[in-house]
Length: 228
Image (cartoon, rainbow, N blue to C red; front, top):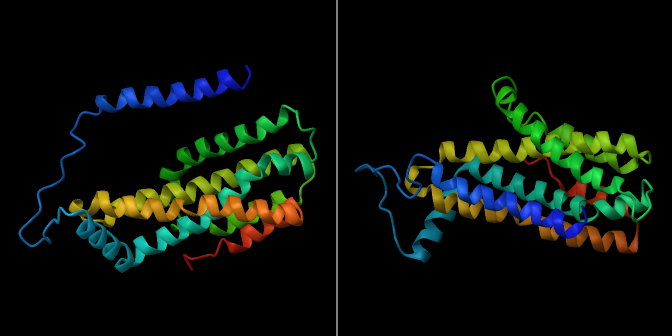
């Protein structure tokens, strides 16, 4: 199709999402009534930031999930930032090989599979069950030189990554009071996803002076098992 039509198709998908938001049969701006025993809702920006961050850092589960998200996005930033470099230097594939696109497609397939698996798994296994699998699949991907095997392992990595992220995003709103949902979720997401650019930058610098495999391995080591 070429790059321009492909990006246009992706942009169209976002437009469709935006057009379907008004179809949600409830108001998105209304929150539950605050009871008499609930803390007052401050309207000032500075007060709201302090209130949201205080709850985030004071709640053990929310803080743990946020720090876990940062470490996951650090690794994800390095992997996505170096995926083409990894395909060319480590697998190795020609720079214009269409199979590089299959790696990105495999990541999307893993994400889709994770969304289907999450409801089933959350009823049967602990929340932190996939942390070892995340690290194992990442390390396996580093030392594989056969494209077909790399495709399978990268799909498995994507499954474990999206399971961890989606599980955290699903758990967090369950423990946040209604009147703090927007501010706590906003700050938690900023921190959790904030590791992505740092991971891409660090991974690129390490790969520039050493190798892409060593760069990705170093980023995986930074993905601390915070849940434990």
